[in-house]
Image 1 (cartoon, rainbow, N blue to C red):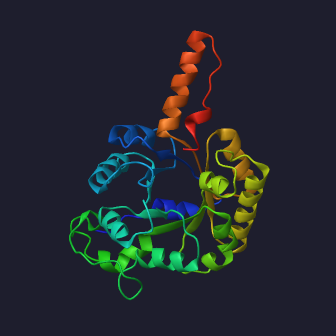
Image 2: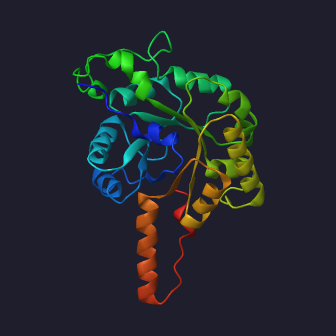
Image 3: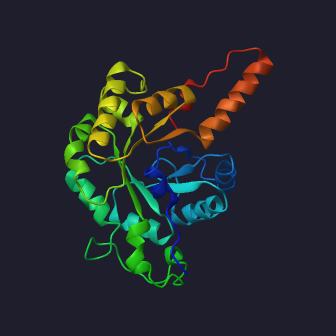
Length: 265
């Protein structure tokens, strides 16, 4: 049995811009439904959502039966968690809060077996289809995607050094944390924040790396596409549900719908 192709990595080399969304409900049923909605990919958030590895596997299984591809955002740049999530079958990992080239090297190395890194070796797990992918140890690296999140002005300043680290497939700008780190918490649209985001995508393109971002609504995400982002995400399963619920209630009550607190994701 052959190792399946990482579709997300393939899309990064194409001219079209893949569109995804975040999974924040921790529900396999909702994840499956969102996977059928038409998004190219969905991001399972293990950083801000109380999802452990067994729950993550259930969500991976649910999304696997849909047209969408899956990206897993790790809770931290932690090699033990990386090992467990990779062995569980995740192919594309997003590492939060990378600040410098050393942290970037650690992230990449945790996804590689000895000789190229320090991922622990196991023969029979979900990623190898329980041992039926006979060349898994030799082929795994080819299909693993590594996305590093830059979420502070310091990280963006270090982008040239981070981008030189071998094994990075893409960078991702975290607008919420970036705004907070710049003194504009909750104000992602602030001109200084948007200028920093623009600077980051230009830096990524200059170093030949695809750059991604997430936005709360189609208008903002459309602006990001115009800036040159290679892949984007809009909202989340939770924000989509809450936004529609508030819209319906406001219509029935003759009020103005407000989704200000729905957040980026």
